[in-house]
Image (cartoon, rainbow, N blue to C red; front, side, top):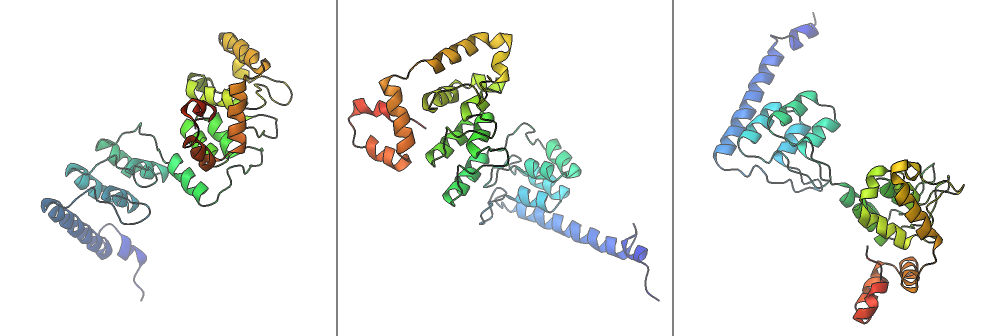
Length: 269
């Protein structure tokens, strides 16, 4: 007669008893390692460079998380991709682990700063910075929409075309101006205004971004429309030409050889 499955997995089954003993032994071993000064923040020698806490999350071990955190492990340590243990737990919907990390002091407002390293790896690996999705959006469109200046800079360095338009006729500057939060990012706004050519703040149908139509942004709208109607000065034309026809290595070459007074024509990214 075959044993019933319930005899193996029931609350008082031999299997559960064995698993409980193994877990206790694992916790005891972890305590011993901690007591002997093991480096709790050491990283795996792998491409992910995860810490012990990352591994505890990956293996769904809340008791290990509590032990590691109480012994001084960095609760907000990031791996190679910028993910904290809390990012991992929340991303895989591990409620118990997420709660455990928060109780141990994990920063719930910590953002994942992986975009830049991921973007860099993709670009270095040969990914096209100008590939379009079904809506005609490139990675640069998305970065400008999100106001991600550091990602915009990296894409531009790898040859992304700032003047491509989506299927709706929107350029990067237009998409940037559709988000109210972006209007505070004066650095990226100035960069887009300086490098967009021809300078335009409307889509293919002549529509302004909806944000600029709001009464409280009338002043900004008038300034931008007026700026778009003005011809560029010679310095502005040189910067646009330099950006469009010289890649990053060529611009670096020129920086090393042009007189200091001429460096202003080289756009900063």
